[in-house]
Image (tube, rainbow, N blue to C red; front, side, top):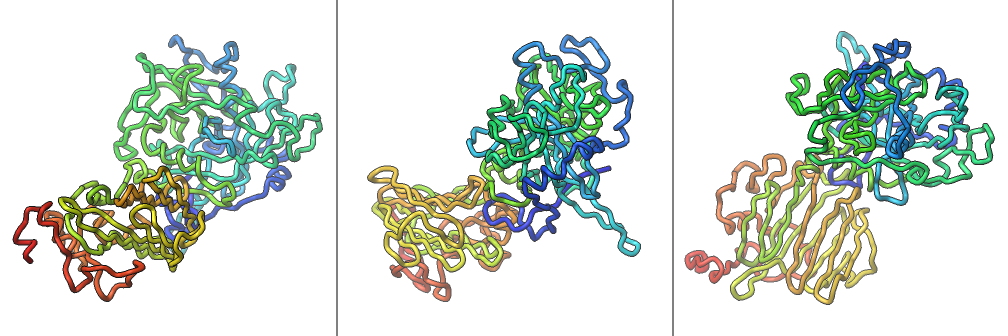
Length: 573
C-alpha cells in the first residue's frame, strides 16, 4: 500500500514552504489528552505495521535478514546492549504509533535526533510513516488524494520493564520505562509529497516535532497505570540521549559497513538490526536518483523509519525506506526539512511540506555593495547610476498580499550605492535609509519589534555604523535589510519559487532565472546593466513608496555614473 501526503493548510511563515492552494490539507490536529485517551493498551496491541500490514505475522527469517558487524550472516539479529553506544541507540529508537487515513492503527520506527533547541525534541522517521493515500472512483476515473496520518504517539525503547517478559510489551504506555510522547507537527519534503508511489522513494524521510511542554508526554513517575500528563522529566532530549544525523556526502567508514535498526512486527517490541555494506546507487524506479543500496537487508514490517547507522554507536546517515534495500540520502534536501523542523512554530496545528529543492540550492537574491544586483539565477551585475528601481514585485507573495521592494540608488564620486529601500507587504510600508534611519507606515523610528503585513520585523543595532532590519518569514527565513554607514543592502534567502513564481523586477524570473522586461516576453539576459535599470525604473503611474521623491523621477531617465562606467555617450544621453 503506497503512502504519500497532502500539502498543508495556509502557510504564511516560510519562504520555502509549499503554500496550501496546491492541495487540500488532510491533517487533523488532536489535543494531547485526546491522543492519550485514544491509545489504550488494546488499540496498541491491535496495531499492525504501517508499511506492510501483511507482514505482521511474518516468520522471523522472512521478517529480517541480518549480518553482524564482522560480516558473518545471522538470522533474527537482536540489537545488543553491551556497550554504552549500543545502549544509547536502544534508548533513542522507538515505536511510532499512528492512525492512517483509512482508520487503521499502525506503527513504524523513529529515532530521537539532536536538534540544539530547548523548546522541542525531534523524531526522524520515514515520510511514508507520516502520511497515507486515499483512492476514490469518480465515474470511470480513479482519483487519488494525499492525507496526513494522525494521532501520533512515540514510545522509546518500548518495553514494560519486566525482566520476565523477554522484551515483550504489555501495550500499556504508562509503564514503559521512558514514557510515551505526543508529536504534533509532521514535516516531509515536497518531492515525496507530490508522488503517489513512495516505494524506494529517494525523499522518503520525515521529521516529527515534539513540544517539550510536559502536557505532550505521558510518563508517570508515581507508577500509576493511567495515562496522563507527566509529572516527571518532560524533555525527551534529556530522557534519552539523542542520535546525531550525518548530512555529509561521505558518512560511512572506509569499508562501507552500515547497520539498519528497527522494530519489525514479528518480534513484538524487540529492537533488531541488519548490517552489510551500503553503497550509493542510482535507482531506475526513482528517476535514476541516488540512494543508499544495502545488499541483503530486508528490514520490513514496522521497521520503516528506523535509523541507518554508520556503526553500532555511530551517526544516522539514512532511514529504512518503503522498499527492501533502499534508503534515502540525508546529504541533500533533507537538511532543509531538518532546518524547518528546528524553527517551525510550536503552536502550528497542521503538517509542513518543505520545498527542499529550493532551500538546498540556496536560492538567494539581493543587492549588495556599490551596488551589485544578484538575480535569482545567481548572476551578478553592477548598475552605476541613480534612480528608483523595482527591485522585486511579487503579486502572489501570500494570500491577499503583494510584496513590493523598491530601492533608490545614488552616485558618489567613482561609485554608486543603494541609499534607501522600501519593503511594502499588503498595506504596511517599511523604509530604511543610510545610517539606520527608518520609517514604518510613515512613523519615524517606530517602536520595534513590530509587524509588516503580519510578519514580524525587528531592528538590531550591531555597532555605531551597522544596523540590521529583519522581516521574519518563518522557519529561519527572512528579508534582511542591512545598513553600514551610507550603504544599504537587501538579501532574500532561499525564497520559494511558488511564492515568488510571478515576481518581476531587477531580480528576473525565479523559475527560468532569466532577466525579463516589463512586457514579460523580452529577455534582457545579455543586456547592459543600464538597460536593465532603465526597464525597471519606477514609473510615474506606480505608487511612490518613499517618504519623499528625489530626482530623477520618471519620465526623467536614470542618471549614470560616467566615472564608474566610462561611457561618455551614455552620460550625455
